[in-house]
Image 1 (cartoon, chains in turn red, purple):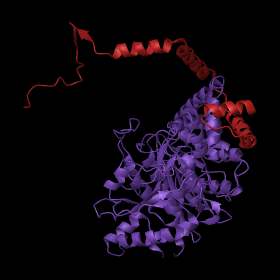
Image 2 (spheres, rainbow over the protein chains, first blue to last red):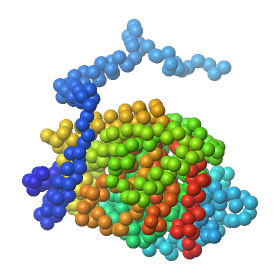
Image 3 (cartoon, rainbow over the protein chains, first blue to last red):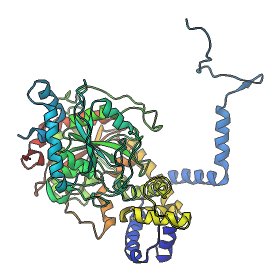
Image 4 (tube, one colour):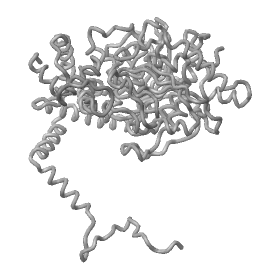
Length: 96
Length: 479
């Protein structure tokens, strides 16, 4: 972390860069960054799953998966009409 | 005995029904004393002057609570401890307020907090800093410090706070009251101003476990206005069903021995565990491993979510605005003037961990590590009923202790963030005093939706210790 990066972070966070505050902020952020860097190691299997997920998202495969799930859950059409799932009331009928 | 400060709600109600006390008179006395003493304690930033509550048939009817300044009360200030929202008033009631009003409760006032819940001392606020009713030179904790101080000083019968990484439990520990962080989603967040949405919960502070249980029963349950609320029903009934703790498997993390804790905290914890065992619990030593390294994970995830959630304060919709020549300049000027130092630090760190090139190194890694904590807890709770830990590494410390090293303040949360990251319930209740005669507590963590069991088990120890009779406690003082 340096002054240039701090300036960039102010822009990203929607804050004014204040030369006077910079020194203190830099010191605090370095300490916080150190704290954040103390993340525990992640087990291989979990890391691989996450990597695959990330790869799928960036390659667009995830979107395809979403579409597949959407299609699988969509109401089925028979003879041009949507078939209402049996758990959903078809409405109408009498009140007896 | 000073009844207004000393009685729990369930005790006052019983005496009221017997004609021995009048809750309306106690409320009047409480309102007078709170206004008189507030300039010294600063638990409240605003009093609400609500009409006296009706005497309806509900265990909470007629009582006044304190409400943290990030929970919406229609027409009341919703400033979140921030200069940004100092004039903002809520146009609606949050679900928790609606439910308490239906139960016959009213609100004494809006309680002070660290800005947007970011802090552990109630010093990072646009309003006055809260002091601890046990010792006015010490912090009341944060970020729900105003709520805890109001309950400890006898300025409210109970209080609502919010707990993202320990913000109900830490002040409860410092002020010697009971604090409950429920399962994530168990209490509706509709009307709670967001800090880190995947961690935020509305918590309860009270004089004893029975009072906290009663408020929990009133608030918990699904809410159509909060799509993340859990539909799980809440068990009713009393907490006093258990005579002892036989059959309870009590998980005790081995790592606590090697943690950097005050001697008094270490001793108190040892004695509490021994007491639980003597009451019938079976002690099961556990290895929690990386669960106790969770501060890093919490810091990354909470700052990232805060950076996203607080982006709405751009001068166009909520709160104050500093008008400049362009949208970009107005945004930067408004936010720079409206936010305090701790919020700015966290927003900058949030921007850092989410930015291109650092996202995977920090944010994704933290998100994965969080999943491991969830899995680890799941394994732990297949062998024990609950995990017992201290709430904080020490008792209340002097105000201003972290002024020169704000990053060190994050380490105060080391024992509270694991339950927050896993979304499971955690209960803090006072169990004794340290050498400075300041309160210490025990934290019990259980699997999802086990709040009632946690409170039932804790109640056995609460009855045994009788902490509320401590002579040093602020509720023993006469107004």
